Image (cartoon, rainbow, N blue to C red; front, side):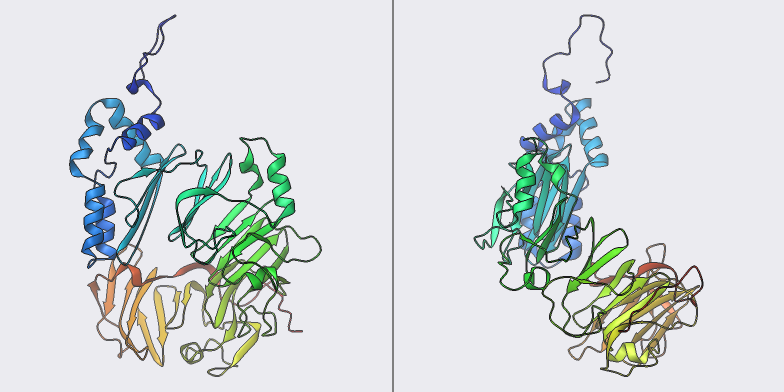
Length: 452
């Protein structure tokens, strides 16, 4: 390792003289345990403390004795350290199942406790990038896109509705002639050039290419139109040959853009797309206002960041109405045109869902829930709330900038005093960071809202 060679001297043909990516892959393929600090098991225990069967499967896959292989020589240990630093990993735990993968220099090893008993090499070309949606995954490789995992909603775009793919399988574009032609025209080891971006979750997949935007999965009618086969990758319905190069999505709301032009589609049962109507979407429509970020997207409402304004559309739920941020609307009103939320001072963070609405101002964090207002004397970065069967908050906690959690002494008294606590990780609601949102519009902070 790092040994200078004299003229005419060749590197010895040996395992330890391979590059670190090859050494790392060889050792993992031979059963070495790369999780030297037991982080995979620790995360599973933290997120799913009661699923002992899953914990046992992880222990059996990451045998402590197999860690010693990395210490057989300096090159092995160096390869492990570099892979830990420069590689990437992903983990998702749900019920009694855990999925985990590690990738370094294009070589990907995965563990799905439902199907594997050890880290297993993914049989596909070297991966350049991995896109994930819980248990659904797509890899961009020099030989095209490969998908594996859950596809019960058709989100991987295979014509036969397959509930899950254990091994990576090549994605095709049989219903997208332009994309298929572009892929076929590229050299064998340059198929990755056809992908601009991939955005996916556990229900649907969007792929942007230089010639088309395509999607598959749940709600395909909203984005493709009537008659769409949700199990196939379909060309997205947009007007005037618009080919987007950027995608923005949150929940059921999707915005495609290129330059200054933006189009939107998704669930619109309550007018939450801000288009001035509640029509079911069968393709994308032009946005009547500029959107910089989708801050919150619920089944009943959406909050957008537009310039320096937080803009609301959809059903005004009770805690939103009681917050006073939409003074012209009552509970259960439908706000069909995008309407700025009215804050008394500059806002630095914001979160809203069906249960709570939270905003952060200078030195304070405010929370509203069904007539209750809680204020804590610091700028929170996340909130944790639990509710009973009637959706009444039972406990609420706030995380400060150092990562420490605090619980108000009483939910009902406004919470002026706080004490340290430790919430359940899966119930955490992150507060979106915004800059100068909610302040009065100025020449440098104006967005137009089309009410026609």
